[in-house]
Image (cartoon, rainbow, N blue to C red; front, side, top):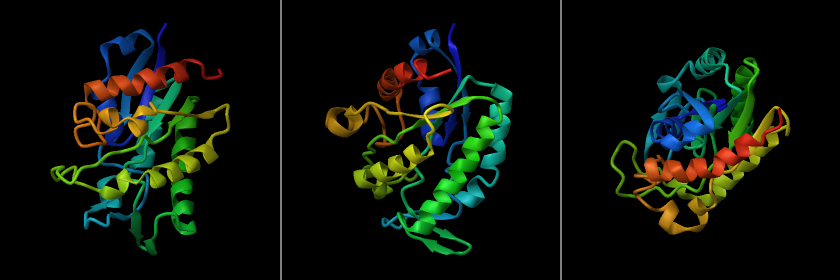
Length: 221
């Protein structure tokens, strides 16, 4: 019988759900609990390209929505796909938080811990997905725009290190997307896989789930 999985996160998760391969239904009963244009950081994310996006205004109730979606779906596993909005400096009401600074790290970990706790209230195990390597392009239209920090692999690795801090190996486990998104330009920088280097089309979603599903199927019960 397929495992009940709800996918949480931002528009990456939305794209994965929309473009999931038909064959996925044999192993996963997947429901959509994502919120497009909605990261977990609080404030105005700011790119060196000059691009700005106010997450507080765009999704003030993301935590409440995560909790409600988890209670509604009652999944066996919650697949949490975040990261596209979590690679930037953030302007908050208290001031600017520079990426990687202690205050930035504290905000990220505090917010994500709250989100994971809200999901755990439903009884679901959590599969916290590592960030893949992103390959944004200067030619991307706005939206989604360029957001060049997404292509900095040191940044994505750092956020992955933070994700791993939150895993306990029992209730919260990390899972990894295909390494080819980092190691093979014909995969990671292929517009057929991710039209903007971030959001998945059908071929990219198939590659993603081919890597993720085996990891979900062996999670401890």
